[in-house]
Image 1 (tube, each protein chain N blue to C red):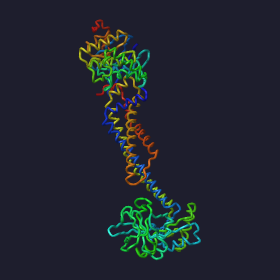
Image 2 (image 1 turned 30 degrees about the vertical axis):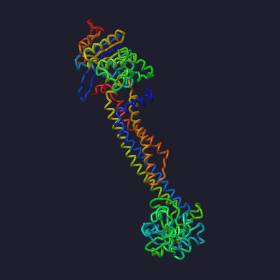
Image 3 (image 1 turned 120 degrees about the horizontal axis):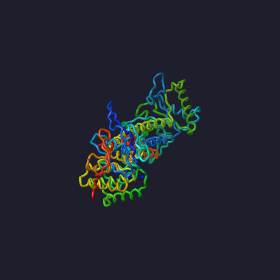
Image 4 (image 1 turned 180 degrees about the vertical axis):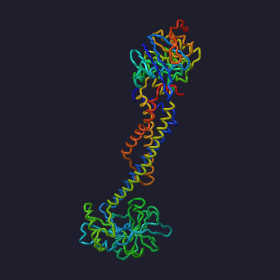
Length: 232
Length: 407
């Protein structure tokens, strides 16, 4: 499903070249739950940007669902993000002063889904993450954990090929973080492919497979046999 | 996202910060308002001037003394003393002049007119009875100056309604009473019907006396200040102008038209000059108003740039979730167009109200052309596009990664 081969990313700032990713290759199959780990500066954010079609590699190819998206233009990338990627950000990134329902429906707006259909689906998704009674709450009326659940509902709006949580629990209290991880595990059980970026080992251990990055290179890639299941 | 939804969303975004939205719109309100008000007042003034000049008669020529050009020096029209009562009589009687119907020699000067208690500075016009025909004068009371008054240098006067108001009070009938002009007592024999007009064109602030009386008794002059000539009809104006010109050249013993010591205007000449003046004036004022519109537009651009910067994260998010450039451009462009369009509509209402109030204060007819309304709407929309384009493009070109990271 995801094929990353010989991907490098080099940032040029004036005359200084910074290598963020150096010849990275791996594959992720449908239904996997992968954590990409590494300290800051290891290139995990850069990798997440490329996997999320927010950026293109300097060299190498990235094939998602059989489609090579390493050389696409801005608007084509926007389309890929809309249809195939479900982002969940550390800072939630919900539209302020906008009800949860509309936040969840936003990706469908850009896909041209009719209004009725959008709102029906958004409501279903919010019910699924346990916020059926908070459809019209704005982000400022919700706790951090609740906001992240809205964000997860939004990431599912377009039935994406992969979910891409980026430090999804970074801004959330520990108890609520467990709830968030429970949702991801449940989604994975239902067949969703999840690629999660994190630097916290106790978050990464919820995944089935962990890729360690350091200095732009993969230093370890293996199955996590001791996957920690959150009890609900 | 369909169009109505985009518009509704833009309006709800704009209402989040009402003060800022209001202030940004105010620039456009003032700009459009002043353009509408000034154009409409200018057009009203132009119409008023034109209708007054036309009310003087479209088959009228005015002969003024003064060289059209004498050698290298061009004298000011009306400044010299080369026309006489005899010239006027010749124009009326000469067989060479076939196209002239009526001739009215006039002597005009401003002076003080007093009654026992009140006084006013007004125009004294020495005339002969044909003036009434040439200038279509009619009376509300009494009689006009007759041939006998002219022959006998009678000390009689016909007052314009404005002078009656100033000296005797509104609506009074002064016929039979007397006024003093240059310390001499004149018996009032009539009052003219109001013809309207303001400033230099006020045809009501005037006192008519016999021409001979004005020349000999009041001002000690033997010339006339102008001769009004009524042509047979409008179609022979050019011919009449030529005939009058050649007769006067002959009488003044001048061979070459370039040496003429008089000038002949037709009403069309005056109308043309006057409408050129008011037209230039209107254009000038509208130009100034247009500058305020430009400033308003820059205000819109400024506020949209601030908005784009403030909403960098939001834009980044929208792009991350799949918003294409066109969608982002449309979103911001619609916001700025709504701002300027609302400003345009309010400005139009303000401008129309202002021009209506001003017009009623200075006695101008209120005019409103559909043209200027359409222009205002079009221009305000266009300003939204022009000044909103750059901020909208800036928003659309934001890289989603950087925009998401933006604090």
